[in-house]
Length: 79
Image (cartoon, rainbow, N blue to C red; front, top):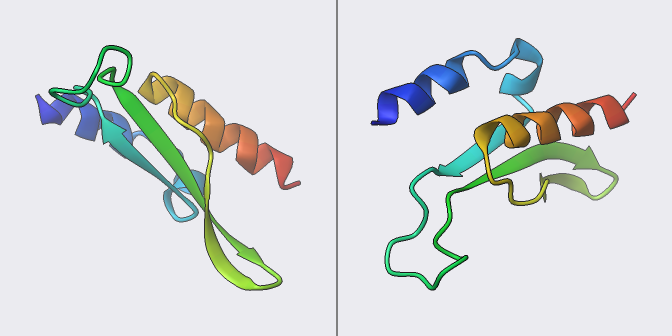
């Protein structure tokens, strides 16, 4: 079952490879209450601030496509 998710990650645009990562829980969390057990993708941006490097959480997303879109929106906001 992991192969489809790996295939999706390999199609990320090269500009998103280094500064962004997506933590995936495609099957949700087993044994959690209703609503908290849903699948979730968490996109993260690695940015440099005046205080040094940090990770910026871009919010929980219900699908991989929305997580990728969140990365692109953040990338577009930098220019």
